Image (cartoon, rainbow, N blue to C red):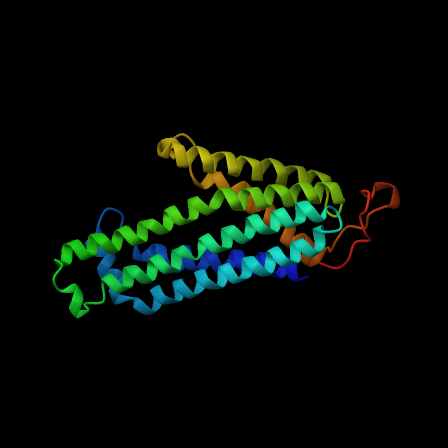
Length: 234
């Protein structure tokens, strides 16, 4: 159940922090208005920081649970998948650091008074925009982790084969989109950036629900992979 709960809770936390708390404070194309919103709603902004930190912790819990589940299928690949997801979790921590840096620039500290307010607001907006870069630097690692795990799900027969195949395809698609976007930033005008990772996120969400409510599908002896152990609770 740990994998199911951690998958669902991390998803809920990051959606809440990003779309409910942070996005309403951002005024596109207006650094001054965005800065005013952040200063006026500092508690809300700081809760976003805590949500992002909690998300990173949740990802570590999730990768540990997935490693335990998938290790019997292939210890080496399970470790690779866990390490890719760990890199993503560590890179994600850059986002709350950038958010706190933004808040510091807007703090009216004495040492900042030598800089004009409009420049401080622009610098603060730069740090906010850097959180976007933080995510897309980490996204290839997230996609690679999900691809490896989806492949292991497919080999294990723990979940329906069709779902596992969807996971492999959607995760590989995410990796491809992430690398193309980093090379060609205008790629999101060809393919909406929400479509980079949404199919993969949907797969991971479905798997989390499956693990939580269905558990691991029993594997018949003749379907087991060489060296695989009996399935155990998630």
